[in-house]
Amino acid sequence: MSTTPDAYYVAVAADGSVASSAAPSQISELWKASRAKDKAGETRVFYGVEGDKTVVAVGTGKAKARKGGEAEENALKEQARKTAAMATHALKAAGSKHFLVDPLASPHSAAVGATLANHVWNLKTTSDAKAKLEPVEIGLLGDRAAPTLESEQASEGRIALDWETGKVYGQAQNFARVLMETPANRMTPTIFCETAKKQFEGLENVTMEAHDLAWAESRKMGSFISVSRGSDEPLRFLELHYKGAADKDEQPIAFVGKGITFDSGGISLKPGAGMKEMRADMGGAATTLAATWAIAKLRIPINLVLCIPLTENMPSGKATKPGDVVVAGNGVTIEVDNTDAEGRLALADALYYASSQYKPSTIVDVATLTGAMMIALGNQFTGVFTNSDSLWSELDAAGNAERDRVWRMPLDEGYTSQINGTGMDLCNTGGRLGGACTAAIFLKRFVDGLIVDGSDNENQDELIRWAHLDIAGTMDLARGDGSYNLAGMTGRPVRTLVEFASSPAGNDDLKSSHHQRPSAALKKREVRPARRRFKADLAGI
Image (cartoon, rainbow, N blue to C red; front, side):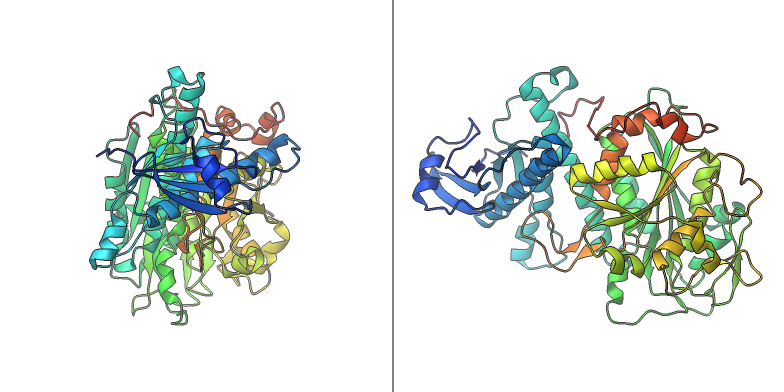
């Protein structure tokens, strides 16, 4: 229920000037009187402004020489995100329940920063902990109009629309955070599907089905099923369709998310220390589901298929054993060398099903797949393996625009020899060297329409753009940075996925034929920085 705002956040330049005309008039004088040192992120809290209002002023630092271009635009967006997040922390600490945010140069980014900083998750029962979970209402400083596309060309309408889209981006990432943080006994495959159904209630153009073991067996998903054998929790294969394009038969894009709701390692048991973090081994499922929710919420004009294989990986007398051989849906035989390399086994069948059943123009899978990725990139960048330069450019642009950054990794057939099986087609591990790379090459064998080294279709064109995002490193943060990057599960790369799906570059390519080489279709256009274009009236978001 909406209340009257009790506080404001205002950005202040190094000279004490306040750009927002909606800010209280005395803030500039109060800032100067506080002897601020003009450092970026410097914060002051002023009480009793305009009667009983609290105002948090955050310094933007000394202005730098303007160079222009995309890099500077992205830097200004990050400044808006961080200052809004810092102000949110300060205002919540001051007891505010409804405050207004200065959008600076980017209402979208300010909304993202404030929404992410406002996130709280706990299961504590004390009154203080429960109080922290009470909702805090955040609005736009100077907001005068409900956003609609009809008002988009007007300055106020555009600002309000950008603000509302930013809130949805942040809400989606927070949803992924909650899914990943929730203990495994409260987020089983069945509960995950129930949570998804509840989250999507009321959204248009969405259908969802949670398939069971019998369905997976009918699809010959022996690789996925093998992971589930040790668990008493039944597997689920969540399939979601969003048809937002004007042409409901238009070629879709596809997301595939790894959904291991708890990963003990199976018979190849993990060490006990830190094993509880493996409740978030369904981070790929969480982030692709959350991104799809945002895409549907914003009514982005695309068709999208989401496939999520959900299971626990547990040891028992029924569990798959090292040395066992399983057969994937595409007929490939796989030697299970290590049951703790289970994510690729589940993804193999999901990738083949999504790519062969729905013939998407582009398929993106997301997975907390390898410890090797954590060593390679740490927690700053998500690793991307892709067969498509154009797809890489679009993901990179989306990641930079949202400061949810990605880094391209080598997808080279030279790694194939490391995963060749002994008497089988493949082995599910490739040794210690290049572990993230060998995992990506393994997955490539299950994307229908890609060229596989040594196969019968070597001289054909590749029929699909594919990217594998390894988020093992970006899954969580040991400590936050004081802004919107909070300690705990991150919910990354939700914003990159939504921004990618909403970009004109991504949308244009959806019109290409499945039988046409995507790179050829993309030569005729420039890959542009992602910009949001929505069909919806967002006033109710």
